[in-house]
Length: 337
Ligand code: SF4
Image 1: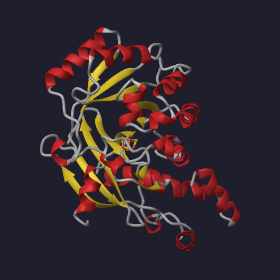
Image 2: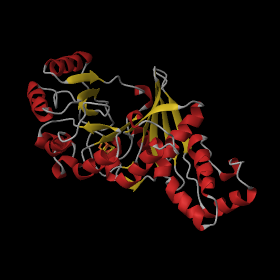
Image 3: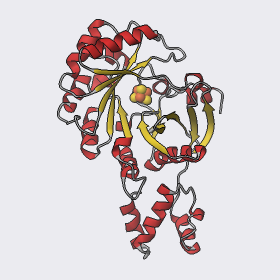
Image 4: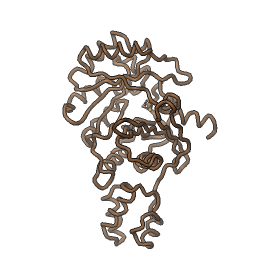
């Protein structure tokens, strides 16, 4: 619930409005996971709240810590027993968490372990918020950035995602600047416009191939909403100030890294102030795709940069703990956990 909704509910019960704000502070600023922790509310009110409301928490089912870079991968258990993944990375500027927005995913990208495992259900705003709060409690520190890039397609669950973003960015919620948040989408064009109009958070678009047929072969979403349509929408928005748009490009050796792909990328992104993040493909079990070597990644980056597109190579994190989306839940399901 948003604060305004809780205030309305409290008013109907004859409770003062400021009590709703008190509950919100406990939930979102102090990370309370039960009404009993809200010690400045009367005992009667706490009992009444328990009878009418439920606080959805995520519970850590599995935690893996990378020996290489300290990245933590969580498998969270939800109230109904479903499992989702989050990945917590430590950078110089602080902690960044990659959260899930759905249990599974309908988009069916062929290079993604989550896409292979099918779809179960959408996450509620409270469950997305709880991913952040449970991780914060686990490390005993504040998280500074969030990316909605875990399991699921955020713009296939737009209503709940926009509510979660409102909780993160409102003064009565986390009070975060939208520039601390990035939403990643495979390119659900009709919802993209709604998201761009409703918030100021950064956007990342999973691109991976600029050619329609080739992209459709690895990302079925391309059949419904071609990347050219997504680019046309983005051209209408201003990304020259605070808000940024980036394109994620998983480099798969011999499949999407030729000079022909570079030429088409430049044509597709012409007129959009953006950055391309190159990601080396992480081999997943049963996948026919291959990882490029360092030299090939650098060559690809330098060629794009020379063509005037700001391009970076994303450092791989947590390679020893199967940090890529969907791998841990798949392994857990196979082991009956
Ligand atoms: Fe879904 Fe993202 Fe995986 Fe594609 S890459 S199947 S959109 S979770």
